[in-house]
Figure 1 (cartoon, rainbow, N blue to C red):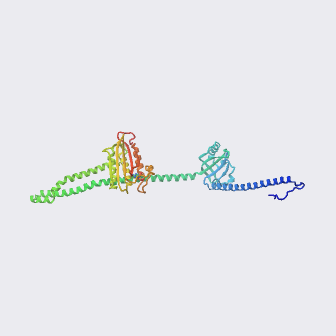
Figure 2: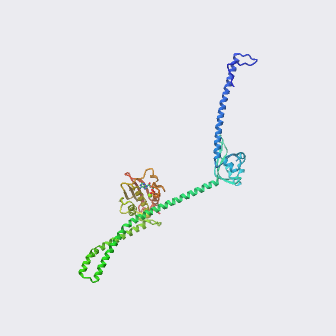
Figure 3: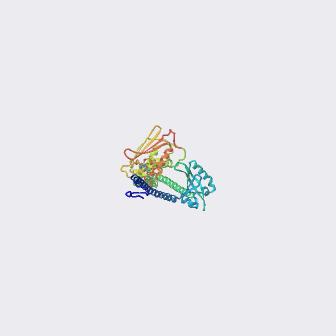
Length: 451
Ligand SMILES: Nc1ncnc2c1ncn2[C@@H]1O[C@H](COP(=O)(O)OP(=O)(O)O)[C@@H](O)[C@H]1O
Ligand SMILES: [Mg+2]
């Protein structure tokens, strides 16, 4: 309320003089000012109230939508506030719960645990995963509780906040997690199995390809032998049948007996050579493919590498050029079967990487230095991008399409080489293509050799 200053203000019984009037004017101005301040404060208060209500509504909606039970207690364990989940579980309204000791709503088996939580809160310590059993109208309601200490503005501990997750729900979550884990383990086992099958498939394809040559050779020679034998038998029958000399000469010419006689030795030699080759391949196969759980043995890595390259590469990439720069022998100790698997994995990866390459070349260098045998295998494929170089040895890491790669070849190889006291590293050649380096203790340098 303001009084217009233009009207003279008079108090009955007092004569207006100039001083009194200006004093009044001052009083009125002050009142005016105070009133304006009050109005401003009122507006501010209303704004703050609105904000407060909004914040309260937000907090209430958050508390209301929580599925976990939330109970705030004072230092003595009396309930101060609850959320809807807690009220539902306890079968009471918030008003009915407020001020009551929480202990009254706990099964007697949980009293000690709750007392410990309250005592810990006084020491400013929270608690996690404490199981409390709430007494609910429907029966005991076990919850896994996390408790935190509540502080006032001056930092004094004034109570504790309990958040409880129904244990049934937790158990279900654990069960789901365990089932998912089990599923994952099975998938991994299947992948490991399919990697084994793929290795086996490669081995079989390579060996079949290798055997094909000598076997066709032996087969061809056996056919030739069959013909020679037929002709020689016919001739011998004629000799023993008393055929006249002139006729015998003609028959000898007709049956090309001289040619057959001359060829028989070489044909048999060829067959022997072929069967020896078959015998060697089978011996190699037995040596390199058996599980070999027994103690390690000494063997030649050069022969092993040549065999691995031949078996994997020849069948799959006939136009591959292989450059061996290996000493006649590289003596190492360990399990030849395991290292053959490593070599086959490396060669297979190189072949995969060179699938679309214009130049298909595999270079193997080997040397022995300072008690170690170091072999590098370089291909002319697409190389390994720097971004994945760190990950190629990770189990299940693959850039190949589903069904083509399992991502296990290198991780298994890494472990096998490590078991031999060696190392396997991946990189790129400066002129392109991947470069793998395999280092193993030379035979006689036993430290760290395969168990
Ligand atoms: N010689 C190589 N050239 C290019 N990339 C390679 C080579 N060797 C391995 N890699 C990369 O490493 C990944 C993992 O190899 P590996 O463990 O053998 O699994 P997989 O061959 O099943 O993919 C391959 O998917 C590929 O991306
Ligand atoms: Mg591989």
